[in-house]
Image 1 (spheres, helix red, strand yellow):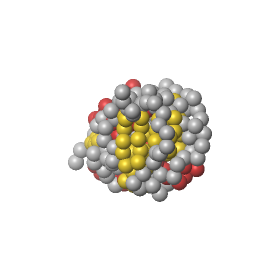
Image 2: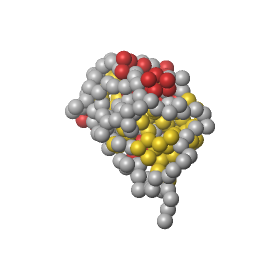
Image 3: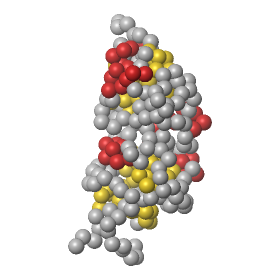
Image 4: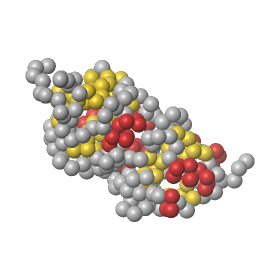
Length: 120
Length: 132
């Protein structure tokens, strides 16, 4: 079995929320729910934790198999749904909670403005 | 002389359960068919495949032939729309986008979109069409 490492992710400049601790135990996945395949930040999180990154738009996993999701949300929809389902959510844009799902967005499950430098 | 300059056409294939909550907030969230299950709950899913040209302020979004002039577009709107069929339309009359993914149109109740509804986006350069 691979060793999984914990990774702390803090908000980047202008970002909100966190810090999140990601640990992909039991083979959990980091899903990149972004345009254009697996975002480099999702891949980097996978590399630093020993986890596996997948393209969230071309494959899907049950929520209990997700260690984290990386999104490129412009601030209305995706930023709510993953925290609502208690999946740690990393937004690469410095978005602050907004939108109809605003009430679900908490610092325990959401961090934004994250750059590669903010990982670990 | 072209009558219309069609940038996008699609048909609605699915309406998520939470779409009414978003409509109450004056927002319609669209995603293309490859959207994963969790995003389908609050989205209007459509079968659009190709964005022929970037959306611009002044273009017209038609929902079942009901026109909505686009007042503003955010910096990531076109990329999300082209890659994922993802569009967030806010019916708030804002002349600047609040969020980087927004498209804004005039402050009004959104058209009641259903399965089979037609989405079209036409260049603002097109001459006005009467009737419909």
